[in-house]
Image 1 (cartoon, rainbow, N blue to C red):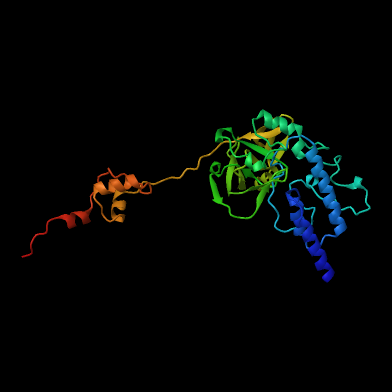
Image 2 (image 1 turned 60 degrees about the vertical axis):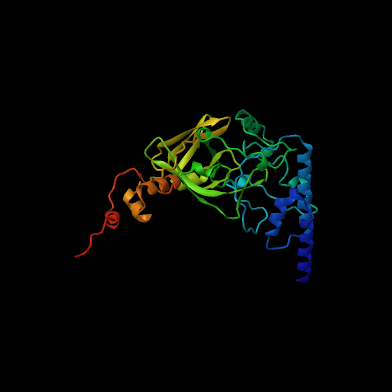
Amino acid sequence: MQAIAQALALVINILKGLGSDYSDIKSAIRVRETVLPLTELQDILLEHEQQVNDAAASNQPLIPTANATQTAPRQSNNLDRRPTYNPDRRGSFSRRGRGASSGSSRFSSSQVVCRFCDNVGHEVKYCRKLQRFLRDNNIPYLSQQGHPAVNHITTTQSPSGQQWMFDSGASHHVASDANLLPTYTYYGGPEEVRLGDGKALSITHTGSTTLPTNTSRSLSVSNILCVPKLLKILIFVAKLCQTNNVSVDFFSTHFLVKDRVMGAPLLRGENIHDVYYVPFKHVPQVNATHLSDVSRWHHTLGHPSSRVLQFLVHKNKNIQCNPQCDFHCMSCSINKSTKLPFF
C-alpha cells in the first residue's frame, strides 16, 4: 500500500507540473481507479508533447467545431473512453510500452480520421473542407495564434438564418439560443460541451422542440443543450432516429428522413458545401394571456378607485386587465353611500 501511495503521489506531482495543453490528459488520468504506471505515463506525455509541437509548428488555422460535441464524463475507468457517437472516430491514448514501436501509436497521422469529412490523415481542426465551408458562410474561426475559441464565438445568427445541421459525430442535440426553443429550463450542472479542438463551452439551458415535416407528423427533438458560444443548431442523427423511429438516408445532394415502418419520406434536407442542413423554422413560444376581469383586480387590489386602478395597470405589467371597462362594485356603492339615521 505504501508503494501505491508513493506512486500516486509521484503521478499527482507530475500532473501538477503540466501546462494547460495537457488538461484533457490530466482529467482522464485523475479519474482512473488504478494508478497509471510511470512508464506508460511517460509514453503518453511524450506522445502528446510531440502532437503539441507538431500543431505549433504548422500555421494551419485552428477551427472550433462541435462535430465532437459531448458532455464531460463524471467517472471513467478507461482512459480511452469518450462518449461520442461513432466509436471508430473517437480519440484515445496509446498504451504501448517503453519498448514498443512508435508505429503502433494511435496518434499516427495515417490513422487519424477527420470527424468532418471522414478522410484519413488529418484532424478536424486542419480540415480544409471545413475551412472552406466556414469561410463561404462567413463563420469566424480561430487562428493558431489567437485567443481561446470561446472568446471569438460570441455572436449568434438571427433566427431567420438558423439551420439545423445534421451531425453524426455529436453526442447530443445542441442549440445556440434557448429562446429558439418552445420549452426550456435553466441548467446548473457541471457538464460542458467539448469542441473538436478540445475546448469546453458551458451549457446554460436544456430544452426541447419539434421538427416540422412534410406530413402531419412532427419529429421530437428533446434534451437539447443550449450553448450560447456556438453558431449552429446541431441534430444528433442517432438520437433523432432512436427517439422518433426513423431512418436517415444520405445522398450526394440531399438527405431524407424516412419512417422506419412505412418507409415514407418525412423530411428532406440539402447538402450545402458537403454539410447536410434542414432549414430552421422558428416556432415562437405562445403564452396565452387571459385578460382577467377588471372587477377581479378591483377586489384583489382592495377596491381602488377607477383612477388609481388605471395608474396601477400602467405601472405594473403583471396586472392584465382593461381599466377602461365599465363595471359596478356593490361593496363600494354600499360603503360610499350616505347612511340614513335609524328611527
